[in-house]
Length: 269
Image 1 (spheres, one colour):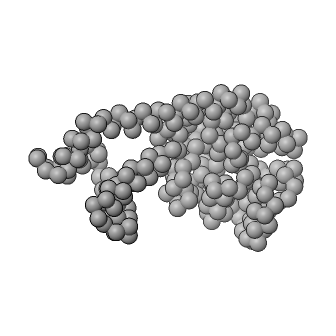
Image 2 (image 1 turned 180 degrees about the vertical axis):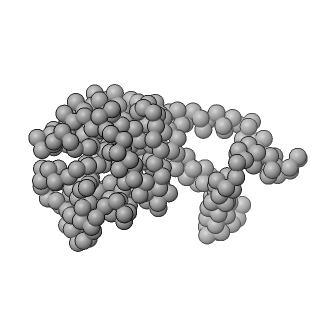
Image 3 (image 1 turned 60 degrees about the vertical axis):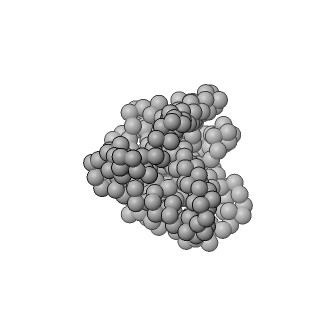
């Protein structure tokens, strides 16, 4: 199986590197195309990839085509590749908001998978929600899932409405975590800790809390109760968050991202 990655930016290159390091892709069976001459030249020096200067030739050679370009470039890209596509090819979209129907109408293909990855894919800790059209067989779905798993873990969802929802939770989610971390870093610095000590305090606290959550069946609320002693420091912090309705604000933020993903899909129709 030959896999083509169209777009070798941050996410495209992350998945290309993950897939080529997996047991599911043979050496130089990972094809890459990007509009940037400089980027193609740099990637050509990596013997793991087969880099193409000609988009049509790259599309013709591939069995599975990953699309990792900006959503607003999709119309032009699909028009460019449509003459070279064949009915048995599978398109896997990593683009936010671009719908299955739009891709089908723009390419003429019926085998389409829509996926929503997130930034931790860069360190092999990503989560990618995906769904597909009816024309994609179970065997094809599993083959693509193996490829998506190469950067972390893939989660199959019932329909693409859940792709938009996953955008609000996992796709945009790392930014919420970084936002919270930044606030804690600023608090630590204001308290007088050095920049290095502040980073260690915050990063290890997050890492440790996540590990505790993953290795037990206890819900976050249960862990909060374990840490927050009656009348203690943690309870004071949690009470402050409750008074400021931080929980509702986080939920509102997740829904804002979800609604924007829906809007992006409507904009490409």
